[in-house]
Image (spheres, rainbow, N blue to C red):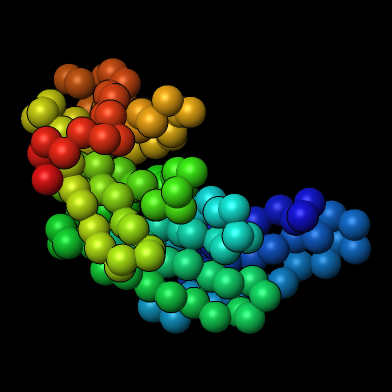
Length: 156
């Protein structure tokens, strides 16, 4: 809708900038010290975001101002980046967990995929139109781009 969304890590908020009116609306994240790191808008207009510190995938419905949160299975995993696929599933990189995760909001279920590279420290994540998930392996010994087929069930 032309708005610009940002995360405020230190302020524990999401913010929406309307470039036409130059107004800013802030949304306080319900979990204290969530340290939001990345966000993406789905096809319904919901704002999905990564809460790094507590390991939570958050969702804000901007129309109602309501939040929903889902705790990922692997504790202390440090979610860094997220992406949403065509079916509305939320994919995320687990930096310290050395995994790629996916959350299905329709069923409220998680799946996780182990990255074969030891301590790869995955960060960035994106999806292509062929059903593949790409992510960066940022550790200096890895230093590569990894790929996962979405239909791949190995590694849960």
